[in-house]
Image (cartoon, rainbow, N blue to C red):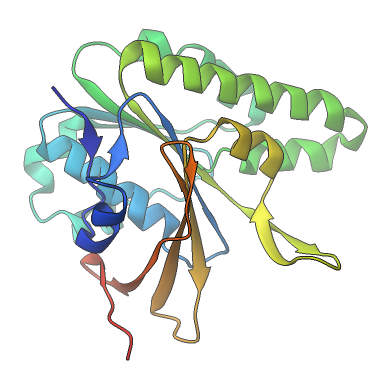
Length: 231
């Protein structure tokens, strides 16, 4: 029985004790060009190689078949196990998430939402007076994803954009609607930039509901993410 979805990065899978857990929500967040989508795609590929389907919900409209082919030389063999959905607005995202149990028929192992907050943020910009209502809806969606992950025994990977945070105690970036996303996430990975544009730091902030400070460095290659040794 499927228990974990490997990331394909040995050093990160070691920290995660095998990969992302079935029945849980995992949050991946970071700035642009920190390989968030690449990591999510690798998980979809590995899920397919284990014989299970992935539903990839592309809310950004940036899913690339060419990039997927770079990451999976065996794409022809596994392509039918990766199902793509492209909502055009926050209402369509809501509908897809609400109907997940209808989509998750036999042999699904993973759902990826990349990025959960992009259409939400666009709607908030369009209707700022509805921010409380929209934030409540985003919270409801995360609650439903958590319930669906458990009842249908699939892993949920939620990718998020970031916003700048500057105050006296903290200076950095946090996921959009971070309180909502972090409340529901069982595992949290922050993808951080380094001095090298081809190297990112994967900071595991939480795994299996336990806070942690473990991290690793990953190099972005055409064929995917691979371990990067410092020093």
